[in-house]
Structure formats: structure tokens, C-alpha cells
Amino acid sequence: MTALPESAPDEGAPRGPLAGVVVLDITRVVAGPFCSMILADLGATVVKVERPSEPDYARDFPPFLEASDGERFSAFFAQYNRNKLGLTLDLAAPEGKDVLKRLAARADVLVENFRPGTMDRLGLGHAELRKANPRLVYTAISGFGQTGPYRRRPAFDNSAQAAGGLWSMNGYPDRPPARVGTIIGDLAATMYAVIGTLAALRHAEHTGEGQLVDVAQQDSVLSLTENAVVSYTVDGKTAGPLGNAHPFVRPYELYPCKDGYVFFGGYTDKFWRLTCALFGEPGLADDPETDTMAKRFDPDVYERRVRPLLHRWMADRTRAELEELAGDTIPLTAIKDIGEVVSDPHIKERDMIVDVEYPDFGRLEMFGQPIHLDVTPARPRGLAPRAGEHTDVLLRGLAGLSDDEITALRASGVV
Image (cartoon, rainbow, N blue to C red; front, side):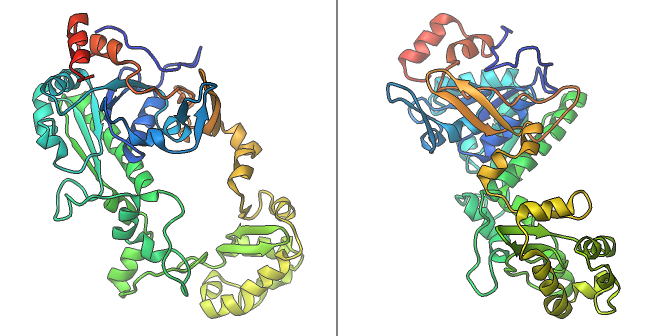
């Protein structure tokens, strides 16, 4: 097979742990693209397949980098599609189906996030592609999964937050439930898809047997609801909105201070004793009404004794003063806006804000890769492709097509 290009290799960096793994990414927006992006950061060769006439519509999501001639490139798209190679292919055309089968025969993984049944109707579902490649790991991300009565329902992130129970638990008790302030349904499905793909890939490498990895957003969100399921099945309690409070751990929430808010979670006996000492009242650790974790967990004791005490300790101090006082001793963290996070020196040290230079468009800063490997580190500074940017080299090198065949596909609009 002809060597495939890398989108933006880090000069001198070691090859990633997934080097040599070929991934076909037939996804759009976030859940699927983020999954394949993580694999790409870890060294896999990821081929982003888009329809020629209708590429990933996240390319139209703001914010945008803008070239001097007015051309725009979505920074949103760039963040979730870095380190990939771009291929356009019409999967509805018979020639396009044939090309995808030839690509799948050479690939290790295929990721798609269509509604269940879509790829089967195209003749490109798991059962069909495994004929071309029995070792193919076929990862399907959807709203409700490949089985069950809801499998064909359209879904977005909010669908998963609603159907998975999380929406009903978020917000404040005296107000309507509120969605989690990020696309947690998409992101949770992403993480489970990555885990499932790597597990299936390991099995395929050992046995030559591929398999279907079925990840649903609803399932993924349900698994994030902490104690809600067991509280219902054991005690019959239905979780509801609690604001910033925890269902049973106290103190463990947001507290106001002079210039904003901090999180404090010193609920254990050890941390409570240290907290009383740090705030200059060590004797309060032995108060018979609040001297054990179980007593402080009691809602009445917490509201009457513990919360007012914390408010008194923190009200006249700034976030920085409180963090300096807490140091490495007790769990207290300033609640920061995203601008403060981006400029945080610890975030910088962890390489969690990375910058890349896009030809014609300029510099882009985006989040880095939270998986840190000391021998084969991730490479999060790759570029996202323009639609179909690497089509010719991929059709030659991965699908094995001749120049004449590629010319014919272009003429018919298949690529």
C-alpha cells in the first residue's frame, strides 16, 4: 500500500501508540468526529469521508477563522477534526459504495453516527462490510442504539440528556430542570465509543475477528447519573434538581466569596479538622453537633450550622486568597470562567491549550489532548482537512485506484 500523508506531524515526535491503525470516519458534528479525533491524536491514520455535495455541516458552525479573501474555516470543525485526512465520496452512488468497500477492506476501524439502519439501506452496514474485511471494527454511535424500540428515533445531545435522566436532575429545586451546560450526551458517547473501539481493536489484533461496537447517547448519559439509579431501585427516591448541592455529601458545593465563587469539598473528618484550623477556629472540629461526617451530612445540621460557618469564613476573602490559604491542604478551587482557564499556568504546563497555524487563515488555539502518555505521547497539533483535500492520494494509496479511475469518479461527481 502506498504511504499515506500525515496531516500535520510534529517534527521529531515519536509515532503514536495507534500508528499503523487506519480509521474510516463517516461521521459528522461532534460525537463521531471527536471519537475519531482522539484516535488520530494517538497516532491512527484517520480518513474523514464526506459527501461531495453535502460535507459535514459542522463546517458552518462558528466561530470562524477568516482568510484575507473572505474565505472562512470553522474553528469548531477544526477542533474536532484535527489530524485527519479528507476524502469526498458519494455513498449513494454504486461507484461510491464500491470504493468504500475497497477502503474498508484495508481499514482497521470504521466509525459512523448515522441513525440505525441508514448504512444498512446503503448496503454498507456492519454485516456487509465484514464480508470485505472480517477483522473490521465497526463503531456505530447513535441516539438510542442499534437495538430496542427507540432505535430509529432521531436524536441530538439534548435528546440524550432528556431520555437518559440527566436533564431532570439538573438545575434548582424551585425552577424547571436545566440542561447540562455542554453537549454531555455527545461527549459521553464519544468517550465510550473510544473505549469500545480500542477494546474491539485489541480483540481483532489477537484473533482476526472484528465486531460491532454499539454506543448509544441515552445509555451513555444514564451511566453518568451517579447514585440516581440505585437510590431509586433501593429506596424509591427519584432524583431531582439540587442546584449546586450534592445528593448527600456535605459540605460539597459552591460558596460565595469577595470576588466570585469557590468550590469547597472538605466533607471528610480529616479535611473538616484541617479546614477549621486553617480558618483559625480549630476548636470547632470538636463541636459535638458537627464533629463527624455523618452529622455534617444531615441536611438540618448542615443548613443551620455548617453552611453559615463557611459563608462567614469565605465572604471577606477573594478567590485567590482562599486558594492560597487552602494550598495543597484542603479541596478548595476557584470557579473560573473559560478565559481564566485558557490562561491558567497549570493548563499551560499540561499542554491543554494548543495552537496551530492554518495556512491562509492564521493561528488557532484549541483544547489539547487529556490523555498523557510518557513514551508515545499524543499529537494534538494537527490540522483539520478541507473537504476532500486528500481524495486523490487516498484513492490511490488506500483504495488502490488508478488515475483513470479517479478521473472517472470525479467526472461523475462521486468524489
